[in-house]
Length: 371
Image (cartoon, rainbow, N blue to C red):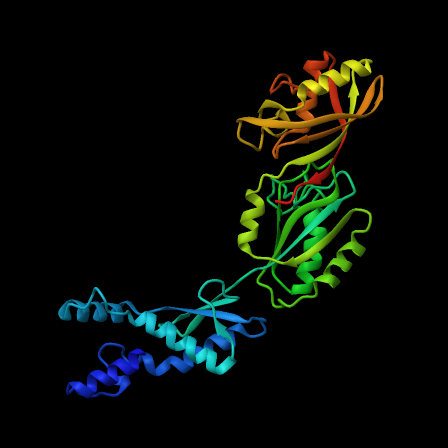
C-alpha cells in the first residue's frame, strides 16, 4: 500500500479531522507541489538523452523537526517513514507518468535532486563509458594528458604556453572524438596499466575505458566512433573492440594485473658472446626479482620495493653489441631497469648476470593478457 492508501484506511477506522494540504501543520502544503517539482526536474534535464532516472530531495529543516516531534510523541521513530522518502517516491512517480522513463535505484542515467525550499534542481548526470583496446604506433606520446605541473594547465614558459607537456596523448586522440560525438563536458581515460611514453603498444592492444562526463547523447554509434578515431589518428593510435561499459569495469581493469610480453632492443657497452647472453637470460627466466622504484620515476611515485616474476626471457636476434629480447613478466615489472639494473635498485638484472652494462634502446609491448 502507498502512504496515501494507508492514510485513507486509518481515516476510515478512526475519526480524524481533515484539513486542506496547504493548511497541514506538518508538511505546510509540500505534497501539493509534487507535480511542480516533477516539471522543474524535466525542465532542468532539457536536452539530455536518458533512459533511467532517480529522484532525491532536500527538505526544510523546520519541517523535519516537526516530523521528528511527531515521531517522539507517538513512539513511531523506529518504523515511521520520513517525508523525504515519500517526496522522492511521489515525484519519481510523477516523472514516470510525464516522461515514460523508468526509475533505476542502482545505476540511473540522471539523478535529479530537488531543493523543495527554493524550487531548484541539481542534476547528477552519469558519465558515458566505452571500453576498447588501443594500439600506439608512435613513440613519444603519453597515454593520458600530461598537465604542466608548474602552471596546472594555465600556460607558462615551461610548457610553451600550452598548459601541457605534450601536444597530444592517446587519451586525446580517442577522447576528443568521443566528447564531440556524445556532446559532453570533458573526458578521462582509464587504462589497464600504461606503457612508457617512448614505448609502442602493439599486438592486440591495451584495454582501456574512455569516460565522457555529462553527455547529452548516450546512444552513440560505436562503429562510427571507432572509424573516426582511427582515421584522425592514422599511423599513431588505433582502437578496436568498442562496447559500452560502466564504472565497475573501470575499477576492474585498473585493478587487474595481467601478464605482459615485451620486445626490447638492447645495447651493450661492449661486445658480448651470444652463449653468455643466452645463459644470462636463462638466469632471469622464472626468477623473482626485487625492484625498488626506478630513479626515472622516483619524483612522482612512492619509493617502494616490489617483487615481480619474470616468466620468460628469450633471445630473438643477436649482434655483438646489440640484441632483441622477448620478455614475459608479471604486471608492474619495469623492463628497462630489469635490463640496466638501475644502479642496483633492481636485482637480479641482465647487466649484473651478463657482466656488461646493458640498456634498452627501444621497447614495445606486444601482448597484454585479458584482464
